Image (cartoon, rainbow, N blue to C red; front, side):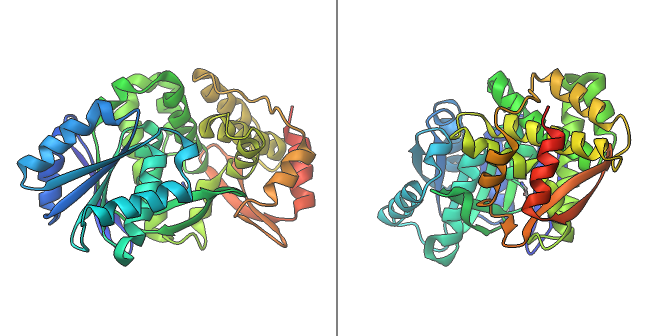
Length: 350
Ligand code: GLY
C-alpha cells in the first residue's frame, strides 16, 4: 500500500492499494465517515464496481443509495448536477452524510461539485477508476461542470476526505482510456520530470505503479504550494489551452488526452524552434506519445484554435497564461497576447 498525504486547506490521503475497492468501507470509517452514503457512478462503471463498493460500505454500517448517469462528457452538465442534488434531497441525505465518486474524471468532477453545493457542502470521497482520474482529476480538489461555452466553466475548489485508488481496476480500462491517462502522465514528465520519461520509455507496464505514485506526488507538491491556482498550479495546464480548443472545435468527439497530447506537441515544437527549449525535448515527447498511439497532427488551423481559445477560462482580455517547456522536466508560465498565441500555433502545428 502506498500513501501520499495532501496538505491543502484540508489534509487527506491518497491511497494506492491492490484490492482497495473491496475495502472502501474500512477507509471511510478510518476518516470518520458514518451515516448515509450516495455512490455516484456512470453507466459504464456502475455494472463493474457498484455492488462491491456498496457491499463494503454496508459491511461498515453505512447506509447506501446510488445514482447512475449515462457515461460520457455530455453528462457533465447543469442538468445532471441539479438532478443529483434533487436525488440527494429526495433520499434525505443530511449535512453529515457523504458522496462517493466511483469513476473517472467526469464522475469525480460532478460528484465533487455536488458535494460542494448540497446543503452548502457535505463530505465526499474519490474512488478513481481511470488512469487519468487517479493521477490528476481525483487529487487537488478541482470540481465542476461544463457550460455551453466551454469545459469546466462552473465549479469549486473542494477537497475530498480521502482518495482511494485500486490499481486492479485498470485491467478493465479500455485501451483508448489508458492512452488518455498516459497523456496526463507524459504532461507530468515534461513539466516536473522526476525521471518519469525514463520510466515510461523503459517499460511503462512494469513501472506503472511507480509512475502513478510519482505523478500523484508531483500533483501533491503543486497543490500544497498553490491550491487555488494563483501561481505554480498553472503548470498543470501544460498543453491544455490548445488542447481544450481542439476538443471544443471537435465538439468533444476527440478525447481529452488526445487533444492535450496535440497541445503539448504544438507548444514544445514552437518553443524549441524558437531556441527557448532544449534541443531534443520535442523528440523525447513524440517518442513517449507514439508509444500510446497519441497523434501529434492537429486537425484545425491556428486561426480557428485561437478564436476558440478566447473563450477558455484561462484566457482574459489581455491574453492567456501559457505553460512552455524549457527542457524535459522543466517548464515556466508565460503571459502572452492572443496574437502571440496565434504565432506559437503557427510555429507548432506541422
Ligand atoms: N488538472 C489540473 C489541476 O488539477 O490543476
